Image 1: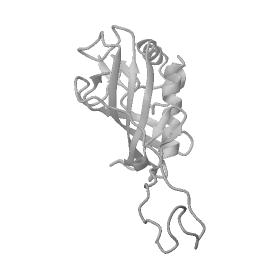
Image 2: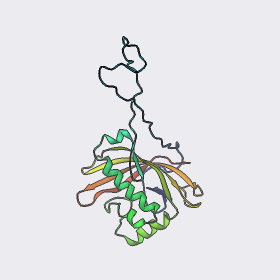
Image 3: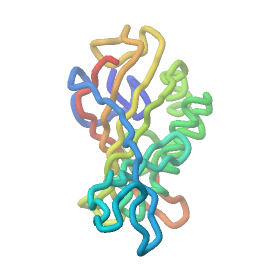
Image 4: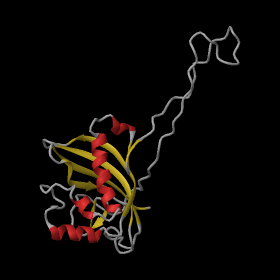
Length: 205
């Protein structure tokens, strides 16, 4: 059995080791800040001759969410991040809702994982992920790939699955954390689609 985006799938190939590794913790930034005062007015409670303090709590940007997918601040600097997150929202949403045809449609037939035109392969894909539910989905990076017309997207997430559907060597595991770097194709007619993925070592929740 090898890992595929969204959980473990014994028929689809991703590059990389899918056993062990550091646990991927998903967090959110806190927001803060201070209210501004009109120019020329002293800070409340301060003497008229005193200057307002220059120290204040820095404002920290909150991550942006596109459906199920949170985009961290470092990834937001890439203008493609929102569209990439929307594609992953549709993909993981298909898995969570049991609509595996929706999820399978987001694979590029030219890739190494799944040809969505192959009905038998799509059925096997659906059966393998039938018990999987994904959460804590975070888009952490978007950058250009080596090949023209493609890009890399790094995603972490947590999958919950029934015993017997866990990753290779840990088939009875019911909760797994993943970090996968996906190569995506870009096409004006289809948008972003998954070519393949490279998985870092996964770990139990």
